[in-house]
Length: 101
Image (cartoon, rainbow, N blue to C red; front, side):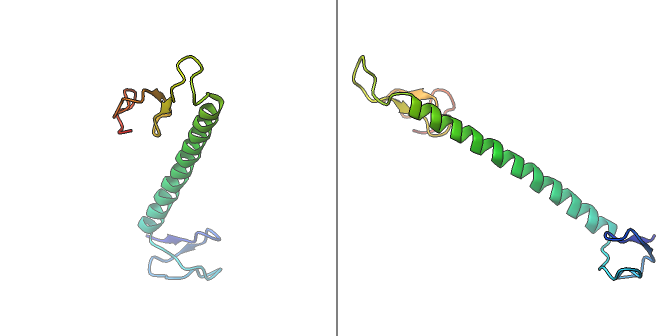
């Protein structure tokens, strides 16, 4: 089984540690597959982080736009720090997501 150079795509003998054309260090195909898989997972994680940041930003904006003091009852409204939904002052756990307040 030959090794393909990741830089120049040169086919090299399976015993080669470096590419015969460009000198790039050669890795086993299984190592390359693992690196590709890790790269894909990292890319997915970055996408997830971006989505979560957008959600947090939206929740902060909504919380800022909502008055923290209700004009009718003059009581302070609380919001769940996990899901951003309004909760009553007496609640110890969010009824929407179940997280502790």
